[in-house]
Image (tube, rainbow, N blue to C red; front, side, top):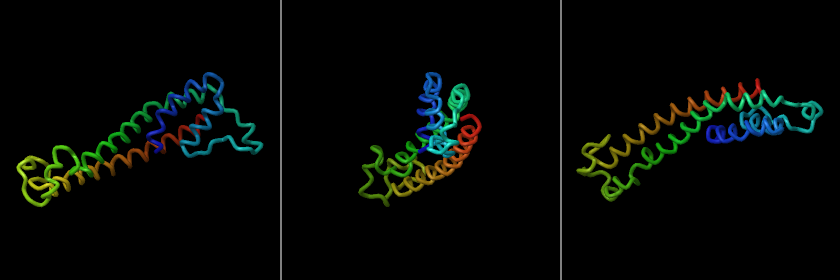
Length: 152
């Protein structure tokens, strides 16, 4: 979820920091990064005043990793349809009634010539892609938290 929300929040936080809402923008970014919002009711929390240029700088620094994270999330969603839900694709749904028998439409597909074989191959590729993407997203989220602690 963090990967999908990071880019929209960074694009909103940058102008918010410039128009005087640096504390709110820093709180949003810190909350999304999982390092605490910094907007509690304690004395130290009330005295917390992030500098607008640091919050703006964090928003700008985080744009590229946030874009990569959003693309990975979108590609993961794409791989659900084309990997795990392969039999529901329009080009494969005709074989749903006979998943274990050979079908000429699957002779050139990964794992063919049966629907089950093609589905298994596409799902395996999707699962491998998910595993790699989740590891990379975890690293990006750790980078986000480190940047948020330093700048906000």
